[in-house]
Image (tube, rainbow, N blue to C red):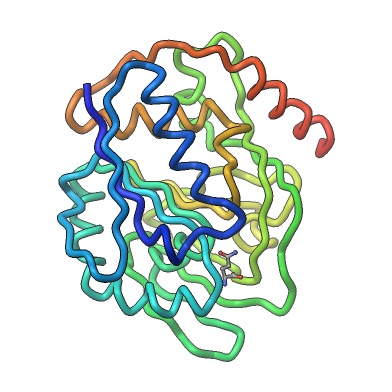
Length: 251
Ligand code: GLN
């Protein structure tokens, strides 16, 4: 089995080591004997996103978001096409915002988004930051528990954004906040879930403490070409311990 991974804008969108999520994704696939092809794609490159199984987009500040927003005028329709065909995708913070309809910055400038996700983001006055504990959406919780001895229904991580994101009717939240701010600090939602594509405000290599969600992404990435796959269990004792420690601190 082979998995083709596209790391989009690695040179522009990589706050707090978001890139770690690509390493974790690839390593967990590799540990199961799945061959991984990893391509880095940025401004000058022209690619057919539907050739990939999984696309990752990290977070970035307003300056980088401006450059990416411009480039997405070209790449955006191909990205939408890929997700509609079932390609899996994870986007974080600044990348997540640009896959929505628009991001309005503090100075009022509006960066157009791709419109892949039915949502919009407007900069608020205060930064929404700190450690965060989430309850995964029920349907994802069940899926993330597949083939695992110990079920984890929560996500732990760190957020830092001023953008407030509001979801439209055609998408669902990734999770509900137990501690922290999430999408906007008001409605208790965090992130987005649409087909096999996800967005979240969890920054940095958060998949290291959330191995169940990493595996959900791998299974979704393989699903377009292989249907339902049985992922061999890994020894996640350290990862689960790290998750439980953070969860305990935040509850
Ligand atoms: N500029 C955006 C915000 O603060 C995104 C920043 C980020 O990716 N952390 O909302």
